[in-house]
Length: 140
Image (cartoon, rainbow, N blue to C red; front, side, top):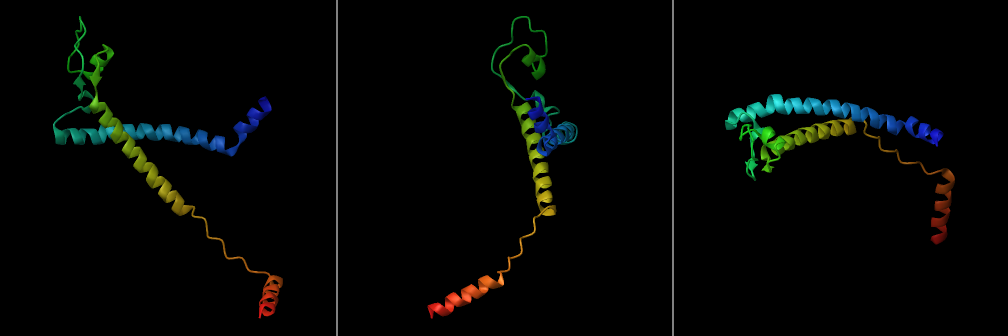
């Protein structure tokens, strides 16, 4: 069983997948920073709301003894208050769209770079051509 596992791990596909996961995690960090540090502040400046993560609708009442800010999404979530957090969802959707678009561009360019050449039409061997000619003359 150990030998089978070694064979499985040594395959190229598994190693390629491992590299892809590491690069994907790093890319995810870059996209999160792009969204959180560059895009969302611009969108917030246009909409007048400085932090999309604090866009929510509280669905329940504050628990007894809650001493935090009733407008702080993280504090309310930690306190177990049911909320409809559409701002955090909007940020996640923007992150997803950026990642999906970047992957689309990468795959599109990779397909163009590694486009397989169309196979040249195979030449018909002379004996087959001769046999076809004989067949055609027999039909006449």
